[in-house]
Length: 92
Image 1 (cartoon, rainbow, N blue to C red):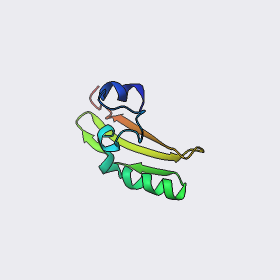
Image 2 (cartoon, helix red, strand yellow; image 1 turned 135 degrees about the vertical axis):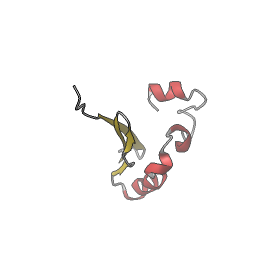
Image 3 (tube, one colour; image 1 turned 45 degrees about the vertical axis):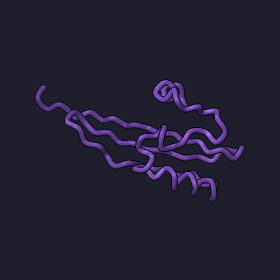
Image 4 (cartoon, one colour; image 1 turned 90 degrees about the vertical axis):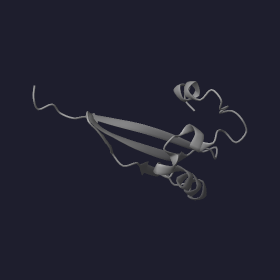
């Protein structure tokens, strides 16, 4: 968990044995298919890239992507990105 995630979820101890439950810390874990991808990366050692559908809003769109990487010590690294794209203004 990064610092902002720890501030958002002070009830979760990321250093506790087994770490935090993914569904509690990553709100879109099911939509992204993170649990299945974690198992796949742990079994195969191959990196996985996941994308949630683009969320359309009045001011632009938001895409959520996750990448899972196996680390040399056997742990898995989960990175989540939010890509916000503003709509272009045509009436300037």
